[in-house]
Length: 445
Image 1 (cartoon, rainbow, N blue to C red):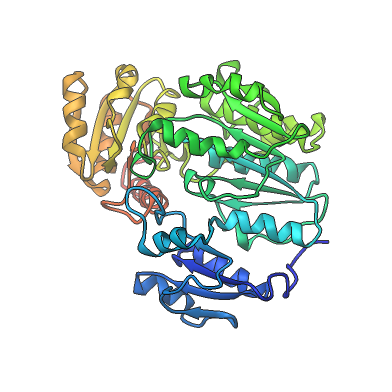
Image 2: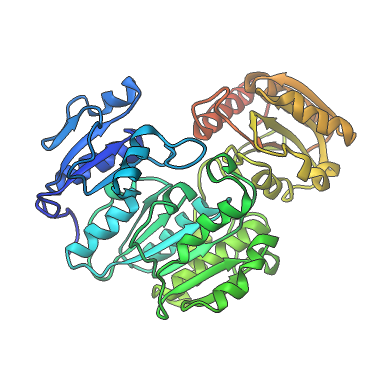
């Protein structure tokens, strides 16, 4: 049994979907395809255009009534509690209507078909996309049917129906985890925790509480994987040891278990160990693990070398949208020219001072460049504010050549939204600019 969900699976049910981005539009179409009546809305006219020709069963109109709703499916970026709940979400909560993630509805849909496909969930402030993709790769190389998505790649409700032997591999953001009701993960991993999304969760403890939801409802036959490379996660070890699931702890300090060219640095060693532990639990043979690690291609915008020009490696780590993620990249290279900046998270780059000695120069872009420059100046780090990526790339190339730095690293430690729609577009722009360097007279790619 695999493929499409039955067209009458949710017949007679009525859902509201708020937010018609990648997750919401897919959820609306999937629910309607399973026979549900769907009211879909987005406050932005452009997003509503994604359902300009809605499928049968979908009405694109404001969500004004909670009567008869089985649930409100809220896109991850729309708050239902902090900092201020969206008015529709507030009405749903007041009316007792569940506010759910599309991952929750995927779980319900799979179980309603009778499929016993297993679910693997991966969360953490950093590394969850790489670990999700690696686990899916390990399963695929071992011939185990799987579908990966969630916060990474396809929206959860756009994934196909898998049979009893299949595995859903879901990257779970904190926004998704706070909207679960029954989803149970056969294998769940919490990789790390660092300050992020505090506007949505209030403080680090509240953020951590949401991340711990990934282990809820696990049983004695399930696996819990916990990273031990940060203080907060270390504090969770005893709690999880007392829980019903089998606990496996992982650390990047132990190094990679096998050669994996696409996984540089100790943080990726931790990611790999987490994925391997989950793969073993899900039936991947030991003999298949090392070859699969070696063949893993890695993910775009996560420490991917995109070119070598005049002996200088250009590394795209645009996914590093906070200081903790940037620290993982900075630790991998002995001497670099660093491109950073954008919209800084709480604390900026002050926690990165231990890595400053390996930096030849920093080129700063984006809104919060002056704030980052202040930190660098206080630590005696050579830097320039160049404002844009277009200016930063050739300046970084020149600096790397003049200062004998073999690496130019884009690892912004900041969100991209001041200058780019997302980190992917920022990384793509970096790649285009680097390729233009290789076409200059006198440059040898």
